[in-house]
Every structure is written in C-alpha cells, then in structure tokens.
Length: 356
Ligand SMILES: [Fe+2]
Ligand SMILES: [Fe+2]
Image 1 (tube, helix red, strand yellow):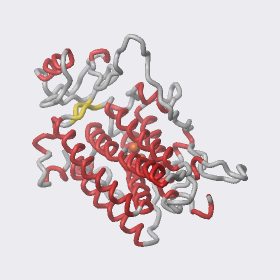
Image 2 (cartoon, protein in one colour; image 1 turned 180 degrees about the vertical axis):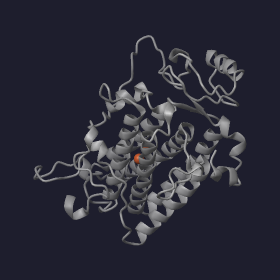
Image 3 (cartoon, helix red, strand yellow; image 1 turned 30 degrees about the vertical axis):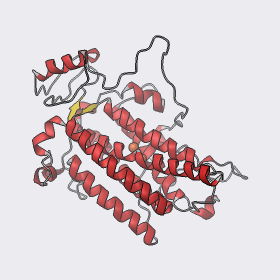
Image 4 (cartoon, rainbow, N blue to C red; image 1 turned 30 degrees about the horizontal axis):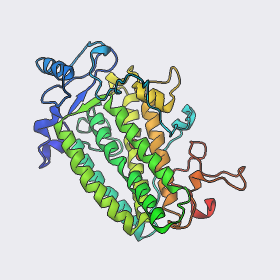
C-alpha cells in the first residue's frame, strides 16, 4: 500500500489485501493474499475456501496444476480451441528495445483539452491503484517502491480502461457508415483491433492475478463513466478523442517502461524467472527462450507505443475524408509509411502531409 492510498479519502487501505490475488503461476515462490476474495462456483469455490483457511501464505510452493485458472477455456465435446481473426504482427527484440518515452507537444486548444483530460484521468488512476510516480532520481525511495502486486493492480485497471476507446470509436464510425451510406476508408478495423489488443493485455495480466470485489467495483464504475464520456466526446470531436488516446498511451509507455526498469534492477524478484502465461505466448508468438515476464512487458509496451503512434496520427487527419494510413497500400511502397508492425514506428505519430 502506498502513501498515496493510505492518505486519500477512499479507504483503499482497509481492503488492499483483498482486491487482488496473485497467481503463484509456475511452480515456485510468489506472493499470495487470499482474504475476502470472490471466486467461481463448484470445485473452484471449495478450493478457494480451503485456501482461505491458510491466509497470508506469502511463500507458496503450490504446483501449477493446483492453481486456479481464472477464466479457463470452455471444455466442449467438439471444439479444441477458438482462434482469432486478428493475428498479432511479429515484433523482434531489438525493435521492442528501441521504444522510448516520448511526448507530442500540444499545438492547439484541442490538444490542450486532450492532454488536460489525460492528466485528470491519470490522477484518478493513480489514486485507485495506489501508484506514485517518482520524480527523476527518487526512484529508489521507499514511498515510491512498487511490488509485483501493486504493478498488477495498476496494469489490470489501466487495461480495463484502455480497451474502451477503440471499441467506441470503431462502433461510432461503423454506425456513421451505415447511417450515411458511405464507406469508412479503413478506420473501423484498426480501432476495433486496438480494443481487442488492449483486452488481450488485460486477459494476460488476469492470468497472473485475480481481482477481488474492490477492483471489480472500481472497474465497473470507471467503465460506466469512461464509456459514456468517451462516447459523447467522440460524437463532438473525434480528433480530440484520438489525441486524448495518444496522450493516454504516452502514459502507458511510461508505466511499462518503469515496470521493466524495476524488474531489471531486481526490485520484482518473483517475476525474475517466471514465464509469461500461455495466452501471451500464443498471442504474441513469443519465441522459445524469450518468454519471461520481462519479455511480456516489452511486448505490451511495444503495443502501447504503437497505439500512441496510431492515435496521434489519426488525430492529425481529416476525420471524415482521409483514408486510414495503417490499412492503405502506398503508390510508392519503397518510401517509409505507417504500418501495423514496429518497423516504421514514429513515437509521436505521422503528420498528415507525410501519409495522405
Ligand atoms: Fe494496453
Ligand atoms: Fe494501449
């Protein structure tokens, strides 16, 4: 529990141990706090009750097969597995290591509204996830120390919010295309794919931690407010909304960069040798030998950097008439142009006269 949450009016402190259960995942030590958790029915409920009698097992050697899978694939007589239509582009390690923290300068009132809104949202998110971002040089001070559990709390909350804008933007553009009987020029697909990608981030982190009632309540409230707010805002100014997402993704890159640095510095010992969940290995096609939690965070951060680029680029375009550069074929393909992969990543997006 950080100082932030212990001093805020929201009484996170009293429930802090119950809103996230860390999966011990793989068969070695990790943290487990098991009080007051919601859980599934049947055998899982029985198992959870049994575990609740052994509260505060800080070190667990539970074999992996005994770990509860929070959302196992349904077992049906005929279906082996469900596949996605959106295969993830392949990232290589050197591309992912080149991702940098970056900020697009504000240029007009629309950018200011977007950046101001992100700062307000960031403040709220820090509050509910117990996060304090350290000023430069103060990363090692105790008040800014993050644990595996604190990071997962932040990731789960962040990703549950991050999956909303792409779906809202895609949905509204879809409806506009139907209503006006006009084509959309390729935007819908990219926006829905972004929402799907964010949901995969969430599902991946949920393999490492099970949220309790407090986290679920926060997510429910945040989704209700954020969905409606973004929906109305997108009707008024889609350009400002894409800029908003661009700035939000700048924050996401900062968050994951700091988590990676924490891990590299030895501040997150339970994750040092832990393998990424199978759902992540499959989704990103993580190569053999590159499937640690650090590798996973590099993939997620690269996705966030891509969202940052895509949304800043979309925010530079004519919302009604311009084709989506990320689904377009170029007359001169030899010149650099936006793509779905990491090869032409531009931290603060492409300007309109570079891509249209
Ligand atoms: Fe994400
Ligand atoms: Fe993102």
